[in-house]
Image (cartoon, rainbow, N blue to C red; front, side, top):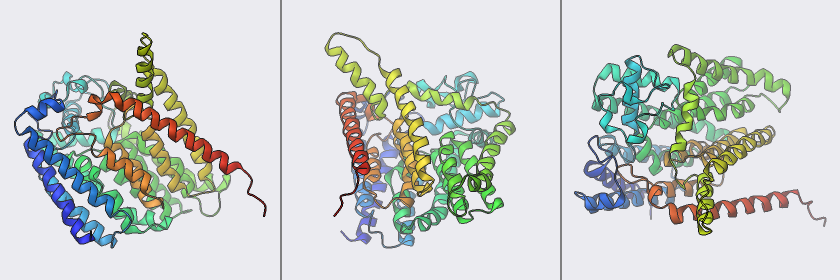
Length: 466
């Protein structure tokens, strides 16, 4: 199908998703314990599910079909922006996190640390909008975002006005990505139009980053901006320091952005890698990021409880996290023999250990290769090996890989599949498909591991002599 027709196919999908949002999105007065069956049996249930499924399919099909044949960067920007318009004025889709942001902001504005207390302590005036599981858990977000949340709630004093400003912050993040991603693409020899299309027209952006107003949009935008400043002026102290500050701001929104900082230090080196060059050019980047995160924490009047808050993700058990899926599968196999085994703590710990080793290995490889591409791989590994996976998390690596990778199929496929994992009101399908979801994910882990081992062995074999 021609690209100009696919533009309107994607827009039709966006309109259908907006309809699903109005009829049964993540509404403030929505059911906090929905299931796919209860949604189907509820008011407009079949229409909501049909609009969500068809809308996601149309947008995903148009995005996937054009991923390697975008006419131009301008066309990609105009089309992605067009697809966002219906969802900018629709209720939240796919998540209730924006309500948690609002209540955490209310706690902070009232002088209560969201790192020490859940939002039920205040209590938040909009507590009924938040899922029960997150009412008594500390916030896992960085100090910069907590301050931003507090300022938004204090300024507006209204749930709906706060939601609008959180969505505006997400749009700012998407705008930063649009402005700075071409810099990374040109640096890596990737067409800017293709990079912008993959990173901005993906259904995950429209549904979760913009409509759902997730703070990941702001984090990714600041991350891309910081990396772009670093690679634009390697070897120059003040630009590198500014890039480090931007990366620190990204980490102040979500700490996972800091995974890219060691790779940014490599990208900052002017000339070939050397320890002297790393210390000289990498120090402003790392120092700028570190001082910014610490400074934001002190300015906010908070402690570093946001680090321990990351552990709250372990409360959710879903097979979309490979390490969680393996633990679930071990439990299923043990049950066949009459035993009860809770393998989740072990498999999740192994996943984190593997991640730590893999991050060090990727950084070591990046010394003599493209550090930006390896930063994308590092973020992909972080998402894949964490105990919890939400579909919008995949936008962290996808955005960087869009501008640095020459083969797009594998990470685009993950994004496409992830777009179908959460219903319009935020109901995660992984909760209701533990079997066969967990065994199938475990099988995929085994297949990928075997292929990686074979690939590594093949790479070590000496080339045949003619």
